[in-house]
Each structure stands twice: as C-alpha cells, then as structure tokens.
Amino acid sequence: AAIPNGDSNLTAEGTLDWAHWAHMGSTDFDHKAGAGLISDITVTNGASRLQIGSITSTASWSDGTPHSPVNATGTGVGAQQGAGLRFTVPAGTGQHTLRVYAGNKSSTARLDVSLSDASASAFTTSQTAGSTSLHTLFTITYNAASAGQTLTVTWTDTADASGGFEMLMSATLQ
Image 1 (tube, rainbow, N blue to C red):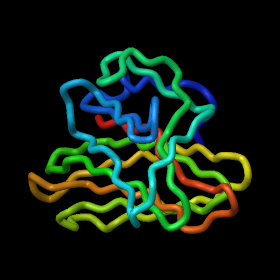
Image 2 (image 1 turned 90 degrees about the horizontal axis):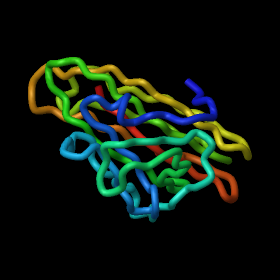
Image 3 (image 1 turned 45 degrees about the vertical axis):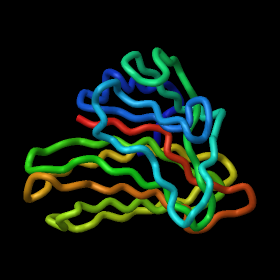
Image 4 (image 1 turned 90 degrees about the vertical axis):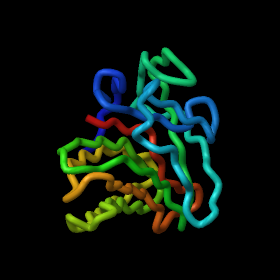
C-alpha cells in the first residue's frame, strides 16, 4: 500500500522490535533497545549504502538505540541498479507481522520474501516509480513450519534511470 506523507511511530507499532536505517549517515542502524530481532541491512552485489534524505514519509521513536528520542526523520538507506538491500527476522511456528517501509525513485524495484525452511512459497512483487519517489508499506504476515527459522527480505533495484535508486526506511515486527 502507498504510504501517505506523515509520520509513523515505530515505538508504538514495533511491539517486538523495530529498525530504522540511515538516520544520521548511510551506515546508521537504529533499533528498539534490547530487542535485536530485525537485522541490519546488507547490500548485495558489493554495492555501497547510500543515505537518502528529504523523505516525506517520516519515522519517530522513543525507545531506540543509539539515537533516541527521534522525531520525524525523513531518512533511509538506498542502493542503485543491480544492488539489493537485505535483512532478516526470526521465524518460528508462531505468527508474526512484519511491516516494511520501502521506496524507490526513477527505478523498478523488486521485493523478495522467503522462509529458510521453505515451508511457504517465496513471495515476489515489484513496483516502478517515475521521477517522483514512491513510498510503499509492505505488510507481511508469516510463520514457519518449525522453530529456529529465518525470514529474509530483499528489496532490489532491477532497473533505473539516471539518479534512480531503491530505499528501505524502517521495519516493525509484531
């Protein structure tokens, strides 16, 4: 679903954990203090992490580390054509909801979601954005067939125009 301009309260939404990437710089990883369920981003294909700013869909939190409180930050981590932004969350037999705040500009980006035990079919979808950034909220409800599994989320820029990119801003886990 498209994300309207406005602020998301990660503390309220991420009852188990939340993460926000690139708050003060491209390598920043803010997350719910003491939780540690959502991993930091890895960038595929050896690409560099970019800090994306001036995002109109912002995030706030009051229970984070290393920065807290933070109000209405319009930042995210990005990468360009051929690169993917990947993170993981634990999966077991209990059902969880992961919300992923993503976007892209002047590009086509693909979301790939899979469980380590392949107990559910992998999910893939893509979106194309023109010269104006497109912000999207993906809501993923999941569980695995057995304990100790991992859900992997990858957001990949499959094609872009000059200056195009894909970005991940935040994720919350319930």
